[in-house]
Length: 212
Image (cartoon, rainbow, N blue to C red):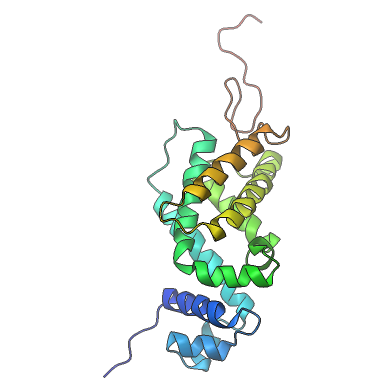
């Protein structure tokens, strides 16, 4: 009887089960391969290291959010509403792996953004999340948006890790609060809000029909 094909999703799930059971630093690629039903050589062909596996896991979460956001952007909605929806979709995608992510965060002193989402991974993902929300993420203002959203996401993740309610009420409340805080910062006022009389880059737009 042919062996069932192991998918990437199977490997990510196996990785997080091993992390939850053994801790991330003690987790061996041998353990992950066995849990996923692969030989060590087969796992090596896909992921030469645990770091590479984590990198691809984060890309996997990005892809889930991007696929779900293709036809859901409401152009009349505020930037804040769009970002709230996109980041909640991301937490939904992460939910099946929470036990493993908790174990990883614990070894990083409670900071999942430090261990699982290095600054490079985090900023890359947040740029894609802005794109998914149909928000300009290029140029100086785009860079501000990326960094600001990274702070919002990392801070909210700390709440998500402790939130075991199915409706994620605590996570939603924290995300809403953190997005509100971001809007109040002077450097975020343009990046995270679409104000009347301003374009997508936060620049003033002359009123039509005004006297010159």
